[in-house]
Length: 268
View (cartoon, rainbow, N blue to C red):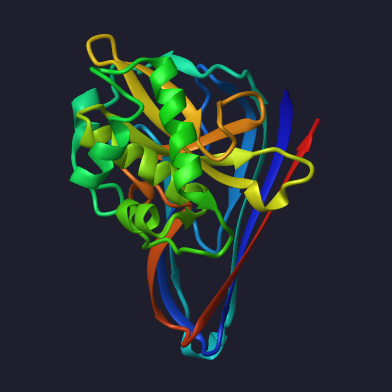
C-alpha cells in the first residue's frame, strides 16, 4: 500500500521566542517493512542530519530571534510517500545495538515484579510468536485504550495500575513486561492509516525479540491486536518514547507554549 503522510506541528507563544534548539525524529527509513519513496522536512532553521544509536535519522535546528522580531509562533512539518509492505518479522541490521541493549530499564518502561507476574500468564520460557500475541491481547485488555487518560511522562507501571492509556502506554507496558521476563523489547513510533480512526494516525507499537542469537524481531501492534501490516509506517525506534519522540528540544523566551499537531494519511 502506498501512503501519503503529512505531519504538521504548530507552536504558539504568549511572548516573543528568543532561542530554540529542537531535534526531530520525523524521518522514516526504508527497510524490510517499507520503502520510503520520498520525504521532506521543514523547520524555522537550517536542518542538520545525523543518526542516533538505534539508526534513526534525526534532524536538528537552532532558532535565534532578535528582540525586534517578536516571533510568537513556529511551524515544523514533515511529508512524504511510503510504500508499506506489511512485513512484521525481520532481522536487525548489523549496525543496530545487540538485542541485550533493549533489556535495560528505562524511565518509561522499567521492569517490575508485578509486570513479570502478569507476563507469566501468557509467556513461558523464552516465548514464541503465539505467546507474544497472547501477551499483547492481555496487555490491551488490562490497559484499555482511553484517550487523554495519560501523558508523555506516564510510566508503564502507572498505566498498568490505572488500567487505561493510549497506544504509547500500551506499547510501554508490552515492552516493560517483556523486559521483566528477560526478553528484549523496544518502543516503535510511527503512523497508522485508518479512515475512521484519525486519532490513531500518530501511533506506537512494540518490537519483541524472537531470537537473540540471530537478532530476529517481530513488530506487534498492541492497540489493534495484530502484527504490523500495510497500514503501519515505521518512523523511529528506541528504548522508550523518551528515546525517539517526534520532537524534543529546549527554548528561551516565549512565555506559555501551546502546541497543536495535525496528521493526515491518505492512500495513493
